[in-house]
Figure 1: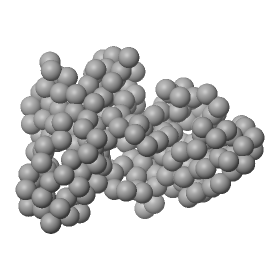
Figure 2: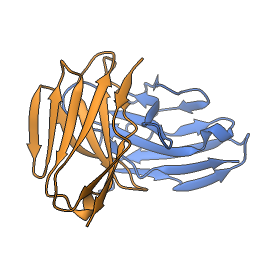
Figure 3: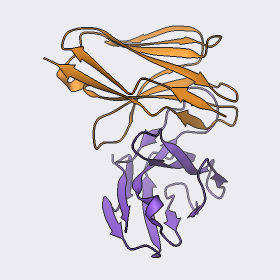
Length: 109
Length: 115
């Protein structure tokens, strides 16, 4: 079966750095996405990785290792507004997205 | 620019009733999707459409049907609602279902409760 694993919840301090990990086992791989979802709202796109390595976009970076079936999302200079769930999704051989259950990130002052 | 709209925002429905959730996008995207989101689970794909006139089944299609008569609209119908269909339903769209960036854009969601 297909599986995406992420930690259920993480806590971090405002101004700090946090790394959210995602491991996957899917039938095929055609890219990995990270989305942010605030409580009661729709998911919004953060990043896309298809090749190994680090993609940096402002305070957010995403890393991919296809051989290890592993990705992480790195959030720097945390702000209170970063409190949200972070969803990892892999596009499989059918070009459908398989989603993790999400990591709820709690930011404390 | 609205992006994707969904209606209704929320609904309480008696079991056995028929219900259609509406989804409209104004981005001229070819691909559209319906997901359900339940606590502790990832988004699960119900049905999708590659392009107007075609639809396909996702991971959890039973009890649901869709149609794609034109590019903009992708309604989801529950023929006879059951309590296990209580969920938050998200409609999404993307330029295509092919590889490449093709991020999905999500509507605001419909919170459905079946009693």
